[in-house]
Image (tube, rainbow, N blue to C red):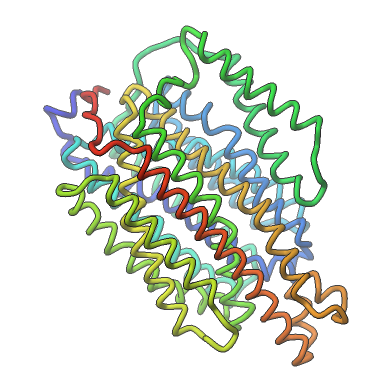
Length: 489
């Protein structure tokens, strides 16, 4: 089928199915952030356990993305999407049964395997189904689903956390995954790239290199520099680049990075992911720890962000027909940096009213920049490499997120401890949970103020990296997007 001449009449229903598959990933991540206090209380999870519950998923997800994306191009994108949904749904069921932190960590690792199969397929199928004139609108809708998940996950998860035990939050993934599987099988055509050889050495080097690199990043803040794993990461990634430049059928076509649209969008996204990752995690905890919201209230409190993001994603899609993606990306990132600046001024006495302004500005910036960045990146990817191109985009985001949570997460923890009074009990100096649970008014207030002090530092870091991402986009991205190749599947 040549989608430039024959449009699939089911394409908008296919988009719905793709959005459902994306929704299951977004809901899982937002619910997990919301469930952290309950995990620490009911499962006896330490801060280190919580970090591994989050980063264990990222480690596997990032390590397998390139391989999964390339294999989906070779063996079928719909097939990999369905397999990933099955694994993810089954692992969510196992997570519900966890009775020890390490049980949950294992389930999260398995969910990372499923997620790595799913994520590249959603965007690669989208660009093969939609023509260029409709693709921007489709990507805007796909991107807006992330915003819907931000509210749907915490709201439903908050209800479950209020009425049931923490494991029930993983129940949300299962029905969404089942519906997405049925929709994929009934609606989606199978699509593949051009037949080409397999690159087993590239697969091994990419998995070893990416996984070991993320491992080094995760372990660095708490355990210091690991020379052995760093050497493994450098050698594997260096060997991967060397081999891919010589392989007759490379896993990753490195010529993608010669395209200014692809390189500029990729580097902007990874900088934004690094600056925002840990801060967004802190924001969900701020709603519960500082404002004292129940999980359900905390989920509903994010509605202004979702509404603004949804509306401005649509506006960005409409403006994209008149102004360049470069203009939308730079403008959106600059607005988002302003939101981080506002967040840095939060005070214990501010309450929710001021936070609404911050959330709306964040939604406006993200809504303008996000779809334009994805459209720019995927518009530069030849359709035959749609799966691996999408996977590379996901990889840089996950690496940025892992860096953010590992490095900035530790910085925020250290800043909290440094801001607490020197005579505060040691548990309260290490965790705001302990300060709040003490019930001592002075210690509770000190814990909240120290948390906000640490969050302010994170906000300034987010502002800096977001402005840096905007600068990269301004300097690197071309004025006009490249003309895409005809899509054949």
